[in-house]
Length: 493
Image 1 (cartoon, rainbow, N blue to C red):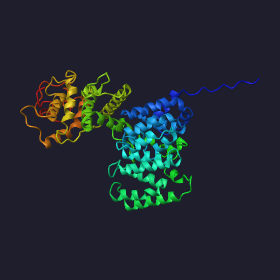
Image 2 (image 1 turned 90 degrees about the vertical axis):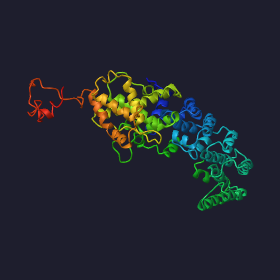
Image 3 (image 1 turned 60 degrees about the horizontal axis):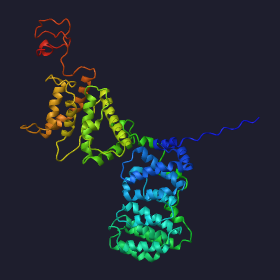
Image 4 (image 1 turned 90 degrees about the horizontal axis):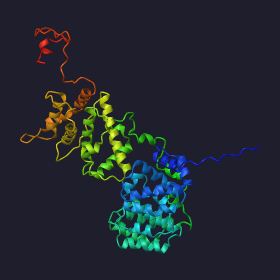
């Protein structure tokens, strides 16, 4: 009797998407599954592209999904991606697209557009001709139009008319990279009748090119004119082909086994990143910097303020409740997050940064505050003010009732650093730098004081058998080896 083979249950598509989002190196199995089930991942990938086009700051997981998902949909020739991708390319500068997805608009995106082309070239033409689109992005768009012309999806006469109109109406500023894309199309399509116009753009400075580059373009044009009809070799050399194997295309983006190292802040030759920044990997630090740049006039100022708050929380009395750092800083109330998921992500990064500061201090190491350089603000003033804000929220536990306590002396020092009181003179630059230099030691002392170690400014406790009468020049009973007057008898207790 034969036993029926039990069919394997397919992996839930949510699991495939999760693997794409969280990949630390090229997720080969997940990408192949995504190609086979492109119709199922398509909505999630397009949602990421649409969000980017709308100006949202994508999370690293969303960037991963966008990168791998675009390649999978292109390999599956899903035309629904074509228009959202064009809209994103029109909305974002080339640098932002490269930062988000690690791809360039002149090589990777043309292949994806060719694979997802839905038969209508009009939105592609409109974007390529628009002066509002980033010049580097327009190079890629021009090259896609060139390949579609070679494939007869666009009439050659129509393409020639577009190139003539671009040059006649000067649809790019002099020196804009769009001119380079324009000349590349003339050369790769072998449009001999436009050679003089290409030379004219060089001569009048609209398309400034070095002599060696001019000679290379002239040669490329001549070779295209001499090429046999249907010879696509020159397009293949420019990677102007529809997407084949997405893994091969992604391998050109250097998704190798050591990618995880580059995402953990490990620079070449470094085995131990400098904490507390090591609590966030390189991608996370760059993402957080982008977030701060979007929401604050000066991202360096925001970092200084955040570090001041984190240092106060880490070195001060312990709290069982996880802090909301932006809320404590009083700069998070006006922030409009792109999504609840983004808010959770930002708070998670800042909490981990705080944990990094705390780990340093717990290990007895020093944390040097992150201070920005300002022309109009005194160095360290913002850091001190934000540190003091945390102190004022809980004065009882910070033990400010004793004027000579470590915390009281800290507050006095930081008050001077944060700015002069009415009627006082501001600190000199030398005194300010001296106060900043001792901050790392001060933070460690505060941590020791509040987390079970003796206050470094406190006097040693009297021994139980301490005599009521000890001569000033006699050895101190505490065992220090000093004279009593130089030790425990130096001041009244």
